[in-house]
Length: 252
Image (cartoon, rainbow, N blue to C red; front, side, top):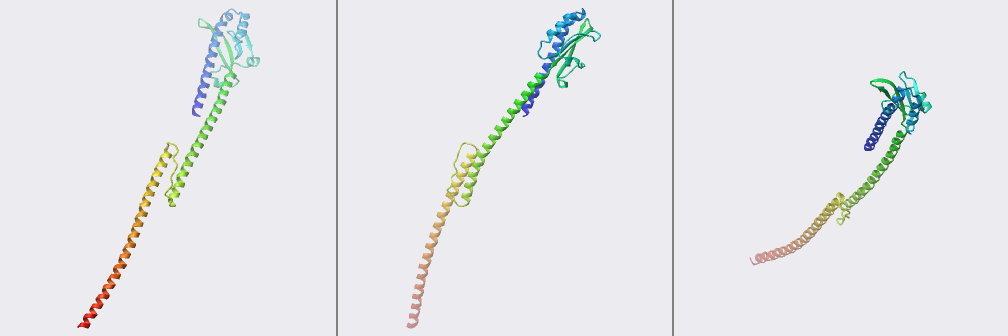
């Protein structure tokens, strides 16, 4: 949006500057062309010059004024000619759709009259408005594409994260045989690889623990059997000792 705004501002400023330069150049050239006619009061030639300059498609009016401001020749839009002339400095200041400019007719430093021109700014305004509409359309398309790409990327990331979440829940419930499928080579794939490695290590550790528990249980059972046998042997020896003691007492 910032780029589009800067581009539109540049387009607007360059077109306005070009219009101002063209208006100044046209007015200066028109003043030079009509100078001899003004000095000689050749009104017919001045009318011809006005008719010739009005062939420019974007000129709304043109007139030639004498030393005292008297009208020598004019042509163009009657409504524009009836308006009081106020020279425009910037196109932004135009409020009637016509950029008004003038140029003095001078000879040896003496001003003998001036020419006044009005250029229609509607074509430039139309071009700028069309550029704004197209830029807005392009901006909307770009934002739509960015939103769509973000949605697709977000859906992909969340789906991968859901797989990891479900796998973590399965491990928490005791299923250590979970294996997360690895797709692509991005950060999510790296996390999936680490997750599978962790799950494998947990499975191996669990198997070792189960094996150790089984061995310990078997050892306990063996120890109990030995204790029972040893107890039986001790009872038998005690009985033998008691019998021997009784025999000794009888013999005594």
